[in-house]
Structures are given as structure tokens and as C-alpha cells.
Length: 481
Image 1 (cartoon, helix red, strand yellow):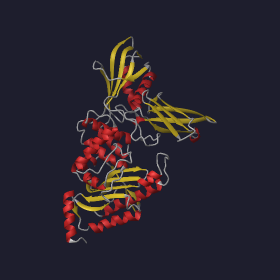
Image 2 (cartoon, rainbow, N blue to C red):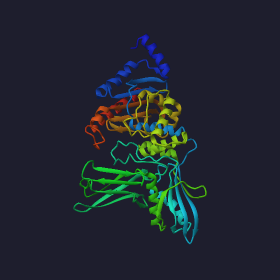
Image 3 (tube, helix red, strand yellow):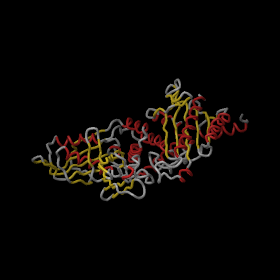
Image 4 (cartoon, rainbow, N blue to C red):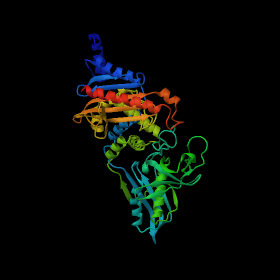
């Protein structure tokens, strides 16, 4: 039980923080603290929960401890996007024509221009091809140019990741297939393989020539990778001994605008439109708009990005938002700084730092206290709840989507030796509790560096313990309603 002096002191502090102390805070906090100690995460977890109906603090543990939050960052990016993009409801990608047509030959150029659509697929390119076919063009005596001037070209989200991780691609003004390319292999006879690198769709498959693969990587990591930015060349090498009889995997693309444009060029050729030259050039003012492709509604894109934790999509949304805030955007680092300043401003604290928009970095960090300030804001709740996914609740009988009229909505995040979950407990779809749980062991992460191993030693066991603790905390929060 709190003494009168301690209660007055806590009340004054809480008034400054915007919360009201719960009378039984010490007892309630002990329940959660004991749970965290029992899990073995006493020094590695930052946790806070608050009752939104009364602004009363439910529990806290190491609430000022700065920890990486992985993909929970996407919640911040989602609100960053929604609060700065009132008029942008769909993405567009355009094809322009500059020249004249004579005897079915275009004497001039085509220009492919993007504005950051992260959802453009190979099959979507058909609308551009049809627009050229409808002009009767069978040959282009000129070039297919790509105009990627709207956004900076980003080659990596995080350069410290292994090169083959498909969730760490490049991005820019023009993207395709979430900037992934499909590597397929089939053994023909001993030590001989048939391989391919394609940009596949359901109806169309584009061959891409600027990305190559050899099977001669006998030393070093399983996959090696080289990027020649001046020539837009990407060279992969893999040790054939790990391939097996046949298989496939997605690999990241780093020169996204070039990749998408070459896929378009190859499909034009496949449809009977001869075109040889390709390059980068801004759309001339005298050119004519030939065709525009529009994405689905951006809130649908955002909801999918949060549900499936799509790094590339979230990074693109963050870049586009920063481009609206600052027209002179030049790289991802600058974009992350802009979002960090914005976040610090809306919560009134300086404890959080974001190095990108997806959370794919152990160098980004926040605290459960900062997230408490973030999640308590009415406009954050109104914006995020429609796009957040439902989080399962774990009971003695197993996993359920709800307990009566109680549900949980939020975003989780996972990296090696890093785990986070933040969100809301809702009653009849109305948020009644906000919480954030961040856990990380950076010493173990450093000792078992994921730069050398796809599955670092001990990381799976550590993650299982962190997730079990997380589920228990969420259940205790629900029980307090």
C-alpha cells in the first residue's frame, strides 16, 4: 500500500506525464515484475500499460530503458503516413510517349515514370504494353527511359544484413514485385544445373538480364553479391552444393527502377514490339501521357503491410511521406531523421531514434514510456485501429481471437535477440488499454552475429522465451479489465 507522501509524489509526476496513478499500482506492478523476473528478462525488457478509460497507469517495468523495437516501428511509420497524406489515396505509375509514328514505327522514345508505388506487379505492366499496342506500334526507333526522379534510389534498407534476405531490398520511385526476383534451379546431371532469374506474374513472366547468377561460390558465405551502380548490374554467386535437386527462392533487387523498366522492355518485345535501347532520363515537357496505372487504395496497402510486416512497402510509405515533408529528400537516412523528429515532437520526448521506417535495424530504439505517450493520443488510436491486425490471445485452452468481447490489436516485431509488441486491448472494439513490451539482448546478438549466420546460435530459444513472456503479460492486462 502506498504511503500518503509517496502517493502525492507519484501523483505530481503522473500529472506531468498525463496519467493518473492507480491506487494499487505497487501490487499490480509486482505481478508483472515478478512475471518478467521469472522469464529471465528483468534487465532486458521495457514494459508499460495504461488504462485509456481513466488514464490510470496499470503497470510498468524499465519503462525508460532504450531498446530496439524491430517491426513495431511500422506502427510509427503508419501514423506518420496517415497524418501527412490526406490527399494521396492511390499511387500512380505513368508511361509517356515523345515522337511520331510512321509505318508502325515509333520515331522517338517511351518514358516510364513512377511515384513510389510499392505494389506494382509484373502483370500490371500489361496496361502499359496494351497502350503501345493500341497505337499500332511494332518497333521503337529510340529508347525506353525510366524517370525515377520523384524519390531517391535506395539500394538497401540495412547494409549489415546478409545479402540474400529478400526482406532487405532496394526501393525507389519505380518498384516491381516488392523488388524481389525469383531464383529457380533444377539439377540436370551431376554438378550441372539449369537456373533462371525472372520477374514472374500470374499471366506474364519477364526475363531480366542485368541480374545474373553463377554457381561457383565455393568460399565464404553461401551467397555472395556484387552491385555495380554505374551499370545497374547485380551479380549473385551461390555454392551449388547447397542447392539440392531443385528449388527456388526470392532474392532482393537493389536497382529497383532499372529492374522494373527492363521487365517492361522484355514484355514489350515478347508482345511483338521491338525495342533495344534503355536508359535513365527525365520525362520531357513536350511528351504526351500515354497511360496511367493506379494502385488500390493506400489504406488497403497499409493494412496489408502491417499484417504481413512488409519491410519494402513500409519503407516506401515512409519515403513518400518524407518527400511530402521535404521536397529535397536524398536518402533513407534523411527520411528516418525527419520521421524521428516528427515522432519526438508529437510525444514531447527525445528518447526514440529511427534509422529507417520498417525497423530492420538494431540501431533504432525506443522506450515503453515513449510508446505509452504515442498510443494514448486520440488521433493515433483513430488512425491506427482500422489498419492494425488482430493479435491472438493465448489461454489455457490454446489460441483464441477473442475472450468474450475482448480483443487485442497491435503490431509485433522480431529480429535475432530482439522482440517487441505494442497495441491496444479493446472491449467491444473500443480501445480500453494501451501497452508496449520491448525485449532485447544486444550482448547475445553481438556474440552470435546474424551477419555470419542465417540462424544465430540460441536465437530461436531466446525468442520463444520472449514470446511466452509477451503472451503472459497481455493475458494479465486482459485480466485487469
